[in-house]
Amino acid sequence: MSDALILDSLQRRMKAMHSLYHQAVDTMDLSHVNHFEREGVLPIAFCLFHITNMIDASFMLMTGTPPIWNDEWQARVGMTINDHGKHKTVDEMVYQRIGDYDAFQEYMRAVFTRTEDWLEQLDPAELARVVIPRPFPPQIASTYSARVAGEQGITLLDATECWIYQHGLRHMGEIELARGLVGLGGMTS
Image 1 (tube, rainbow, N blue to C red):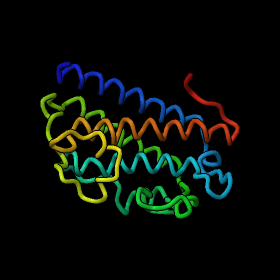
Image 2: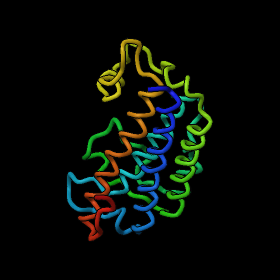
Image 3: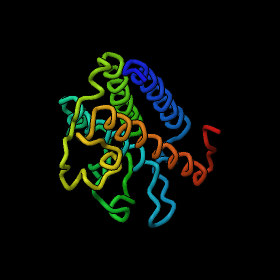
Image 4: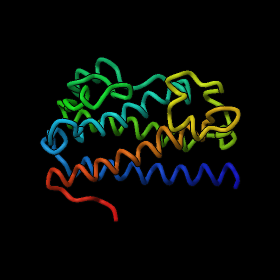
């Protein structure tokens, strides 16, 4: 399979995944997103902020571009926990809430638009570039992307597939399930 064909597929899949997130946030309000089901069950707010902020942070490793998220965004969005929670427990993140839902959606759109724009201009040959060589540092060694990586390490294609696309679909599945807990239906069949 050619790099151009792989990139074309990745571009289309990314847009489709982002469209699910847009549909999800457009059909929920702050009470749905911040709903507290019970101890040990993360709110939708966690999934939404976690995936958006992780994609944003991943750009530094993938492209050298600093994240969009900063203190100004935090002040606008008002996350109760200013952390994506990757290295935190469920007990630490169960109280994650979004303060300003419109501001959060603006942040999410900015991150998703930057991702799609980057993929549109990406040279297909870049997909083979190694972004994290072996041996992996401890925080990477236990990740799914480390399991996917080839002999050289984690390539840009691996990172894009694992850190953005597959990770994004995982959290979309959680959001679809959680929508049922707040009286909303799923969005795909």
